[in-house]
Length: 262
Ligand code: 3Y8
Ligand code: NAP
Image: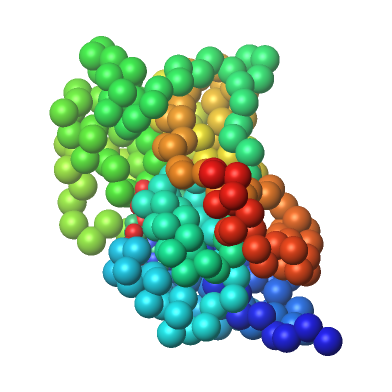
């Protein structure tokens, strides 16, 4: 009879929600899912959830100890690099085993016209100088990067309606929460005369529609590569997380990781 395990899921993605759904009925596990509080009404999940930052690495260490967390699953988005980095540091400091649930990046396929860049600042340059109609599928948090290119018309998709005017003079806002579908994104881009798409390489299925739609229409895509994240054990499926949670040896993954010097 193994003791009950308390599992912290760092969430905010489709995979995190699916993991929460899988753990809701797991007999030996008490899961809690954590949101940053970026959106007004995060989707409910069938396990207890919390909203808001922890207060950096020290705050996360305090939370892990105060809540007697036995395992951490980092199921955040590949661009949530600060959260993921904090999780590596806090789990190393407390000895709490950590695994990341992360989807593979998208790779260009036949017919794709990708312009790959390392940062959003490089994406702004890649859009070019001649006025264009650009679909910005990158959310709200990094729109400011495009203020220096007011000559373009931007189609911007947000999870929540903006509370104040966006900093872009020529902008059309679409309020929608994914997952998205190819026909819907294709129709959206055609309706707005989009000539280019800007996207993060999120991977997974819920945001890929705009990439496939751009391929079908023949639009170029400025694709932002993922930020670097410190090394940690990573899996790509909910099933692999369940196997990791069930494996008593993964209790010492932190020490094993330390031995390997990762
Ligand atoms: C708050 C939780 C689920 C999770 C759904 C996934 C899929 C749909 C696609 C486009 C791209 C974008 C954005 C996107 C997608 C899923 C997933 C994903 C991209 C929610 C959610 C939270 C967030 C935060 C939000 C960011 C923004 C990014 C919009 C919930 C809906 C662009 C990323 O307005 C804001 O402040 C939005 C902020 C971080 C990126 C940015 O920089 O603006 N996600 N998105 C999480 C929290 O508080 O911890 O509200 O329910 C989750 C999802 N968004 O349950 O199925 O798994 O990736 N999210 C990107 O990929 O580029 C939209 O429009 O094509
Ligand atoms: P980030 O830049 O890596 O994190 C910034 C700070 O936000 C973190 O240091 C932490 O604050 C807090 N935070 C982030 N994720 C959190 C979580 N799940 N629970 C509690 N606090 C969290 O993160 P981000 O890119 O803004 O992403 C925020 C959330 O949106 C995450 O849940 C992520 O999974 C989700 N999301 C992001 C994207 C994206 O494109 N970035 C896409 C889809 C979903 P403290 O230091 O105070 O702990």
